Length: 331
Image (cartoon, rainbow, N blue to C red; front, side, top):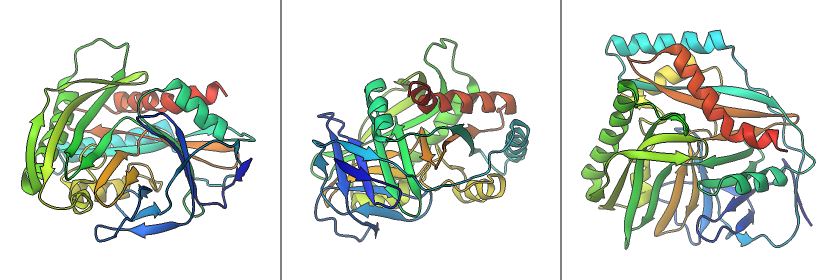
């Protein structure tokens, strides 16, 4: 048996093609656009900050795994009233043309303990066939688990790259027409991504806007295939963070996020995935939570525009929290 804890540096993830569970153990090291990545390695990014790589090739899990004793964290869990107060502040900024869109997040705390958190990862893989699933630990940033429905960038210089513009959320069983607010929110992301690609490469194909289902939730989505004139690591610094996780204009959105949010996003809304020198498979780190000693902190958020409603935005975060909450309830 392989035993891992909050003191270890590791990642467990499910391969998107073979569906094998992979494990990599080593030491997290800083990585940037100038780094040489000699072999396929797992990387994660702190939102709008540094990126860390576990520069050690993963292996398919064949032994029994035990993951326990996570580090304790205690981020502030704000009330419904406090969250809606922040949303209303952003709505006013949008109405006054200072912002076009801004993503505001909150934390949902859930009491939960396990003698083996790998079982939770296995349950996540069983329940959700699509999306990128992972369980990782960094001794400083903690133990994280999640499933991301959103590709940030995937591909290689030889075969070309793929990304998607994903925004708006509602339950899969909600067959109502998408609102003008949700359509506008999605358009901001589409325009941003299209512009960044055109400035740094060429679009080879783009899909029509369609509904993308991720578990019990669905989103508006548009796919892009493209080539790049520079390395994908350099393009990452330009593409991320997108309006889907930060806002427009970017710098004012980041300033507003720092002003309103009482917590540090840490890995939430950063990116995660596999990279080597020539190719990448990276996802935006959404639908995720940090495992603390006796609870899980679920990170959820939504895009705010001048057409937003504070009560509706809160309800959207409740919907998004169900991805991991539904797994916790079955443990």
